Image (cartoon, rainbow over all chains, first blue to last red; front, side, top):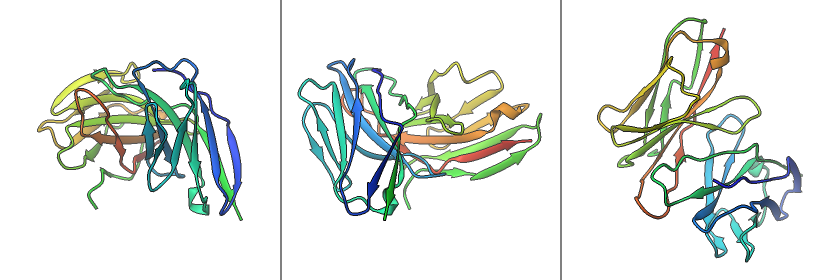
Length: 112
Length: 116
């Protein structure tokens, strides 16, 4: 699976949009971009994933650049409960084994 | 709640003892994964099952570790002769695996192990 690069930490004011970047310059055509988050002492929580097109669900939006070398996770109205470590993961979907390879993620801190 | 459940949530043991953790996946999910997470790091893959077959094991899974999923439903992870380096959060995830296409893994709350 391709390697990802994320900032170590980010801050965001409550109520504002949180934009979390991820670089995956070696991504191949078979690889999806997945985002998970992990609130302190809990298991990772699935947020969203995409291949080429931008995606939106009830939690977030995922914007993938046209060359697919980077993406941005957008939390439109961040709340204190969104404080967590956010992991960007790229995965090859054609293989039989689909383990997730986590990096160290971005620690997002949402403040008043 | 129909999510992934893990038991126990916390375990303290003495070095050299054996421990066993249980994971109950989401109903009808055919794939089950075990990960380990140490402080400040992201989760690391240990092993995964498709139904009752263990299809992949990480090099992290030493011979002191064994995992089973006897009936293709719940799974157990046993650590024999625990060492202090085994102290970590052990996470279980399940998915409805598809041969082609997308697969989303859903994680349980984890079992936090402390080896004294």
